Every structure is written in C-alpha cells, then in structure tokens.
Length: 139
Image (tube, rainbow, N blue to C red; front, side, top):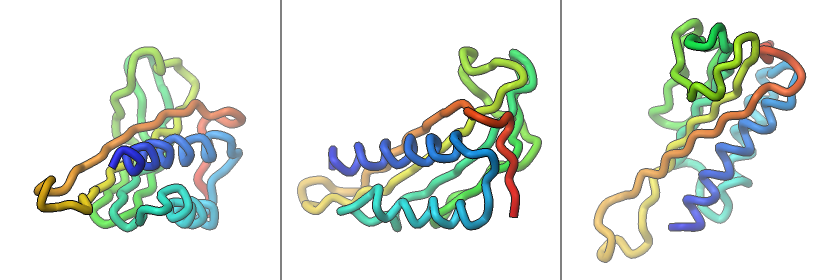
C-alpha cells in the first residue's frame, strides 16, 4: 500500500512536471500522458486512477483562473475554463501560470479481510510553467 501511495504521488508530480516544460499541449501529448500512467503506476494498475490536469493563470495576488483542463479516469471531471481556482498565497504571482495535477487512486487491499474497504489516495502537484505563460492547449 505504501508503494502504491508513493507511485500515485510520483505520477501527479511527473505529469505536472512534463507539461510545465512544454510550449504547447496537443491532443497527442495528452493521450501520451494518460498512457504513461500505466508505466508510472506499475506494478499496480492505473485503471483505478483519476487525474485532472489544469493550466491556471494567476491574474492577481488574490485571483487565479482556469485556462484549460483535462480529465482522465472513471469519475474524473475537468475544471471549467474561466472558473476561479484557490492556490496557496505563495503561488499567487500575477502574470505567471501554474500547472496543477490532482490525482485520486482507489486502492483495494490484497488482504481485504484484514483491511475492510478501499483506501482513497489523493495527491496534488503544482509546477510553474517554465517557458510560456500560460501554456496553450492546441488540438
């Protein structure tokens, strides 16, 4: 279980880091990121993972909005473009953008009789865009 939790945390950080290094994000890249989840979560399955990947523009010291958002996994819902996002005050640098990855993984214990019920592992990762603010989403 601890290994699975670490892999889920690493997946969130890795997806955010890859996108933060881009100058644009295409449909093919998004599909590749979702495929990479299989590798990042191995030997666990990635089918229990839900991911929301969002580009956030910091408008002012108190306001940040969604530029684009993508979701993957059963029950994952992308954020609506233009809606406000709450970020830590230390991230609120006007004129910059943040790549935010939110992951949720449902872990089913192998020894279910010892640990009844599933465990929900959630992780968030934030990376500042390195080359372009904000990173555009293209088809």
